[in-house]
Image (cartoon, rainbow, N blue to C red):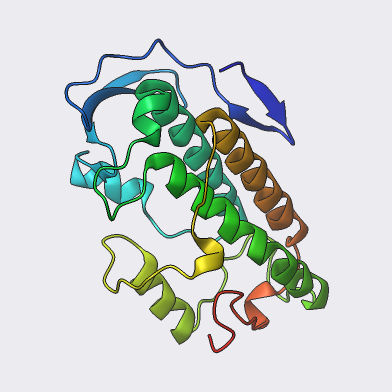
Amino acid sequence: IHGTKKNGISWHARLPPPSPAASQWDQVMTIVDHSGNDARASQSFGRSQEAPDRLASKGRRATTLEELEGQFAEICRRCQTLVAQAGAELCARRPGPESWSAAECLQHLSLSADAYFPVWQQVIATAGPRKTEMNAPYAVDFWGRFLCWILEPPARIRSKTPLPFQPIECGKIDDVLDGFLERQERIVAALRRCRGRAIDQVKMASPVDSRV
């Protein structure tokens, strides 16, 4: 994957040659960190076997826009690495009849982002100026913490995905990945428009369920 840079963020990293899969779903992947060092990590497609402390540092909840932006860049880098190492066939293969493939998971995230973009645009437009310093942590209310508790891994409550957000006919994994990365860029662009605005003081209805 050739490296490109937009808005100061490298979304397409140069990756090492894929390593052979250890089995159908479990494989040894090369994780290239930001410093350029290689770390070997045994991973399962869909369930990570990384060390708990490493997972904790990657899954730490962001409190500032800069931290969020860094996490989105990291997500893109890891997804590119995963697709490059696994290959098109493995990315399209479901681990079980009731489970999604990696390509379908990415497509689901893209569909979800599409639904949120107009909502975020409205929130940004209506949010007033912040009364704190520019990079001060944002406040999270009870319902925000509750939603994080539900959504953050490990999943505590499982429910059926609404039909509009279910992936259908994903197509080639390269196209799915490009669409996913494009939406991540749009999310970061939205984050940058939030700077100086009190977005934590604005409530919004979920596009998935207006009752939330």
